[in-house]
Length: 407
Image 1 (cartoon, rainbow, N blue to C red):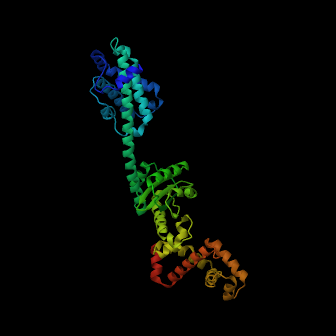
Image 2 (image 1 turned 135 degrees about the horizontal axis):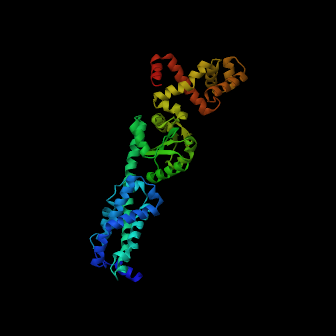
Image 3 (image 1 turned 120 degrees about the horizontal axis):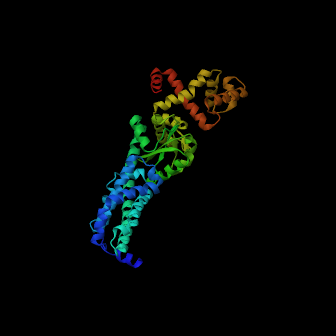
């Protein structure tokens, strides 16, 4: 049998060893074989029974076309290269989304098992070995054809998904999120996931490979993830309860330099605010050479202000100057005196005519109130910038109006 298979494999695809009478019997049995094949699939494949009626109808068409194509194969009418269009052309490409390649192979194997089980009824006496051998060869070619169909579908779907994903991310960055964007995001597998943040950094050298790895890392943490590369920047929209806590694990898939994390927002529609803050932070990050690898956009507010970003101005004033001024108790004046004295407690106390412990106490109150410790160099710089902006807003109506309009 192995010898015979070897000889047949070397023949041209159009040649056949089945007799004309066997082929005629096969052609007359196509309807009965299709019915039997559908029953066999129903009985032997649980996933087939669970499919919706539409998909089952498509598969029934594939089974019928497969048996018809086998009859043509026996006559030498179908070339191997044509099987992918002949056999699988009966079903739309959406079928590759409904069932896997492995399931498709199980499907065709089940159909051909039915054909092979009726060798005694179809083949003429003495023609049984040749008929069985032809079934085996045909099943091999169908398997190759199915693999090719799925490979092409995967390539097309991958290219389309990448373009769609890029469009969705671009719309979110520009603040154009609407119902259409939400539907497109859902088509890419984004569920109603919250909260959401945007992380940006330099694109890695092998962007496609690292982006696939980033998606897998996000999936392992049960995070939704949308990615796009714009110029040299990789933008990641991440959603899920552990989104902020997981950024550290995802940062390794970005290129060199800081990964800037935008503020957490409640839903995908609001991701534009997080994205714009993160992108602004990435531009401003070189002004802070000591910035950590993973840095919040809000921690780069002083540098973003230097870029002329008005929302950053308003946010920094509201975070520093406004609460300090409203609190009273000399907190604002104490911070200013401390910063003006070169962050020396005793010098600040002398300028305020109070004890150094009073200055220390008030600075502690400032840290509790605004979340920034004046005794820490970086946070003192943030406070100094915010207070200066607040003073400008208090003295210049046009500046104050510009801040108000950007809120």
